[in-house]
Length: 76
Length: 156
Image 1 (tube, one colour):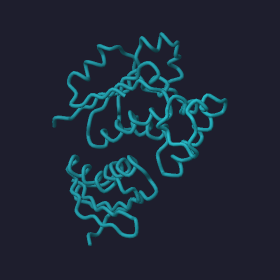
Image 2 (cartoon, chains in turn cyan, brown):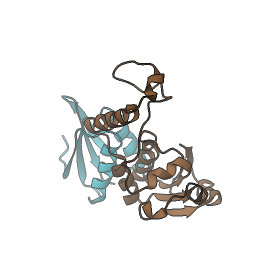
Image 3 (cartoon, helix red, strand yellow):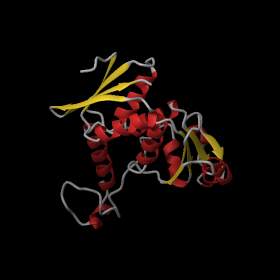
Image 4 (cartoon, one colour):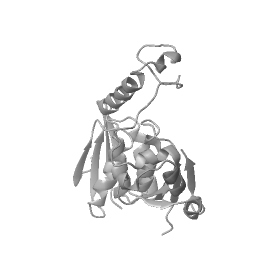
């Protein structure tokens, strides 16, 4: 699995907060670094794919485990 | 880079209908859109510093989920609106839905432009000192200046 440079805990947050917090976290990182996001909102799966596509920050990997959704996003 | 643009007209001032403009504006801003919201009529309520006065009414809203089914006519009873409002607030908190203030603050941080409709500000005698900082005043022509070159325009 990918090794992250920063972890964002978005558990318990609902749309659109996980995306907004992700955007903010990426803004504090430098290009090439990897952000790991853990969310519990099932809507986040589609949203993170859409976010990655539109902002051109690659979604390197994603997984689901025990009701948690994990995303690895690289800052473009 | 050619930035995408989103223009929103916010016309409603209830707790529930306050959400769509701020959710869409903050998300669009996070996606790199340049966003402007034009607040008119009851939508002006969403610009007040304190949003504690916003309510949601079950009266005339048969689609609102209720814990116990009851005829909509009963929603006219005193206390029903307050009950529905606190129920919605509690539910939102429990489900991790952001407060309107928080979403609005995220919009401000993301430099979403907020325009208050001058005509309705005057009509309803709103005091612009009650509005959050950074709100501009403008008219329909000011809206079209931005909306005319927007990729998406929403009337909420």
